[in-house]
Length: 303
Image 1: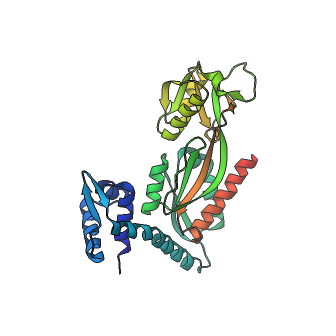
Image 2: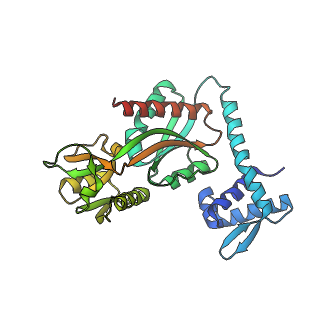
Image 3: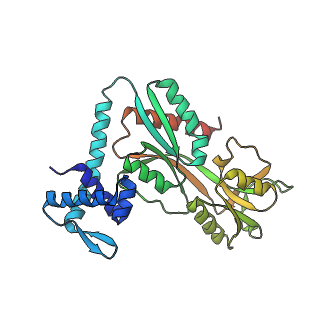
């Protein structure tokens, strides 16, 4: 019988390409990963890896194992969920990963709802600004639920072993200094001569900004960057530039700036919740998913 933990290491190696990267994702040392993969080769009785420079190439036997491992992991999650469903109470410890705007606008209300409905369920929150980092933590088992986002002008990539559910789609807004400008949607091309303020750590939002401006016929002059929306809004308020921000970035913030919808091109961000494939029926995870759906629906309705 093949060892599932070793199969998972091979599966992660197929995604990340190197022993070092696989070790980081799985919270192991590179030597431990190498030893476990060597044991898996002996269990299989066939070579699994070939060296190609600094990278390792999977053999045909390894690719067969990887193809089946995704389903094996999903089935194990489903089995654990099925056993947990037999309990009449929702309890345990569950960790949520969220990027800053979702951590502020969605998660607190969802945790409060879960705490009121399920006193035996302890929820923990860890902030993770990058989608890739949140997904890696989810797949490694460090978190159980991850809030992630995607932009409409950028391709969405399916991640094996992870299922996602859309919570809401919000427009990206032009953040402008308060002035006598008329209200209403604005074409991005009208802002071509302005200085721009870009998100520093949200690489996707920066790519989205550059691509949208390119579609509008100009390259943005990016003089300022920051990972803190309060800084971005302060720069805009001071008249130092304009920015492109998700609507949720304004939740619970007080600022004297003007926000305008983009008439052309249409720009939006979709917020989704991600879990390991097969785990969504697990009662604690199901409870968190239900709470997040409720809070997201309230935001959409403007409650």
